[in-house]
Image (tube, one colour):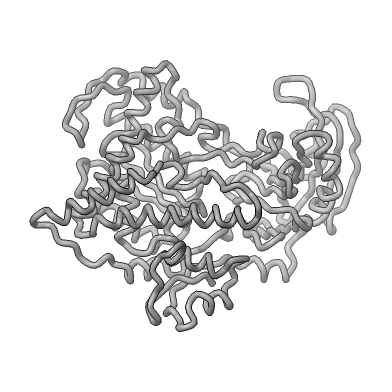
Amino acid sequence: MTLRRFFPLRPVSAGLLTLALLAGCGTPVVNPVTGEAERTVMSEADEASVGAKQHQQVLKEYGVYDNPKVQAYVNEVGQKLAAQSQRPNLKWTFTVLDSTEINAFALPGGYVYITRGIMAYLDSEAQLAGVLGHEIGHVCARHGAQRATQQQKAGLGVLAATVLGAVLEAKGVSGATDLASKTSQSVAAGLVASYSREQESQADELGADYLAHNHYNPRNMVDVITVLKNQERFAADQAKAEGKPAPSGNNWLASHPSNDKRLADITQIAANYALQPGLSYGDDQRVRYLEAINGMTFGDSQAQGVVRGRNFYHEGLGIALSAPEGWRLQNSTQAIVLANAAGDAGLIVRLVPEQAGRTPDEVMRKLVQPVGGRTEPRTLNGLSATHFAGPVRGDQGGSRNVVLTVVGGPGEHVFLLQYAAKDAPAMQRSIAGLREAEGSFRAMTPADRAAAKPWAVKTKPFPRGGFVELARSSPLPNQAEARLRLLNGAYAGGPEPKPGQLVKVVD
């Protein structure tokens, strides 16, 4: 949950893209990669226009990671790769997003994004170049434009998510359909489509080519996939230990399908470059990469609010909450949700926009709009609040029943705390927990502020006691040793660092 946008954006309108693209419908364009002519709904000028517009939406959705050193470093590596691509004259833009997601993606027109979440798990500049090179390949081969054209030919219309590819996932609360409505939409919620297998393979091959011509070993394309497959293995192992099914995943690998054949293809592509005369590979620049990310935020950032166990702290808003025992916290750019163990009920906490009112009573009149029911004043840990249960005016006319509390928080902010459940029985089973969660809403105390410090990636020499020794002093929650192995490419049989070698830790 962030200061920049606490309420969900509406899904990106298809109309914006349609207007931009219809003028170019059926225009013949020479593909910069293949040299072949293809008919397209998106000219190069359209790519730049659409990319620029959608770039602003992406920045609103994710936010830019506020670290000039890291931004400059990624831009340097990206521009170097782009200069060796088939479209060096595009105005390339490389942005590190303030997101914990393991993700990277690109928009038409030369807009490439990578999250700090994935950067924490990469181990060298060459691996970073592999991720960026793959996304540059998608842009150079006009894969976004091709998908838009295919959708229009199929009579499905041109949607923003078609152009975005498989990059922006809806952030719903699993198992609670009612929670997802109105609280869990993102820029392209529900409109996600992945690239084809052929497009992914072509982007892999292009990425390997960009690496080779910038003196990075193309083998790093394979290493990147291994890093991401280890993420899947770790998530599956965690789920198995907790008796849960393996998660489907919302990460770069999940949206870029990678089966054994694809891994074999990447390996063969990389091997072929070793046979080409005139190509030489330098150092993977591991030390330089580790220096660049040393101090980079790990996990939740201060702007997003941080989760520590059952507690949530948002220093910017000055608030804290605690989930009941056995419940879990889910933090997103739209809301903070305190959900029960079954995932079928929870308390959704959202920031009320200023125009909706500056006091609980004003918000009740302007935003909630009750048409009956029961309203009563409350106090939550010294903060004035108004509780309501009953029908409110519906979006399409009529009414719907809600249970919620509007509370005036610190700094003249007003918050809406909504009870939500899959059905009436789930609500009844969880009512005590919902009330406990609501009752934990408070202005941050000095103890809360001390606990709200974000974590950061740091580097240090690998000790003789190995990951067991590092885990003893790690703030990471359960399975600290396994998490540190994952962070350093030593999970699932990965190579063990040598004593004295620089490794990544979380501090």
